[in-house]
Amino acid sequence: MKYLLSLFVLALSLNASIYYAKVEPYEAYSIKATASGEIISAFKEAEGKVSNGGILLQIDDLLNKKELKSSKTKLASLTRTMELTSKNVRNSREVERIRESNYKKIKDLKTKSRTSKDAELINLINASNQVLSLENSLENLKVSISDLEFKIASLEDTIEKKSVNIKKGFLIYKIYVNKGDFVNVGTPLVDAYDISKGKLTIFLSKEDVDKAKNSAIYINGKKSSYKVDKIWSVVDTQNISSYKTEIIILAPKRFSELLKIEFK
Figure 1 (tube, rainbow, N blue to C red):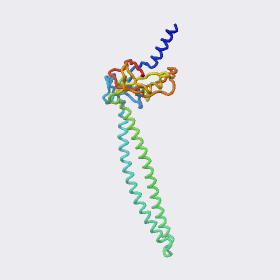
Figure 2: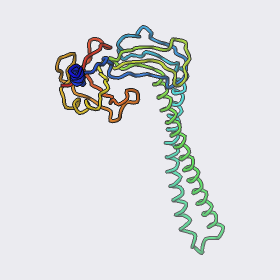
Figure 3: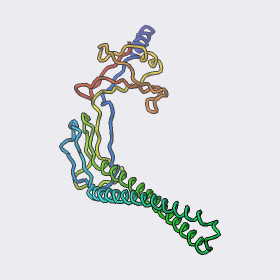
Figure 4: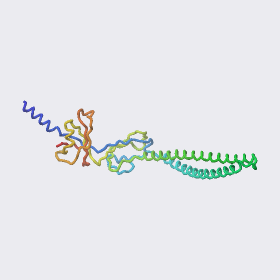
């Protein structure tokens, strides 16, 4: 009995560094709507296929594009108005300078009447007020242009978000919506996988953590050039007393295959 128990313990120690993992895509993405609207086109035939990088789903953006065109026209008009106002400010400052020069020339002259001096002063004040008024208009135009530029950027961002495409080479796993559906922000649209590489996820025992970092990795009994990519430093919440570990591998011919992993 003691001999059998020793063999059992020996078998456990020999298998302590053997794990099994299913080959998963490198990354999984769940794309959700970031803008609301009606789905006006949905390429459902792409489900289960590798993306060519084209538009997969299109949310109605007609009004957004019309508003964008109108806003750009307004921006061009405001920009031209600001240029003209800036020129007007420069001219008015020159008038103010001349009025000020004329007033300084006569303000202390005893040969000029008080009425003449007051008239020149009034001309100077009017010229100064004209400059202030135009400068105020110029500042208001700058604010309006800034607001309009922000609106244009927001519209362009919304329009871009309403065209949903998946990066070329990614697997389009599932499309959740159909043409005619109305989606709100947060509605699930597409699940996609990055299949450019594979990923193996295992849960190491405490005793195997250091061994995994420093040992060769054998896949299905064959030595590989792979290294451990990441080991979580805290134990997993579900696999108690185990440390989640990832190994990145070359893209396999097929995913979901179960592989044996050994550290030697």
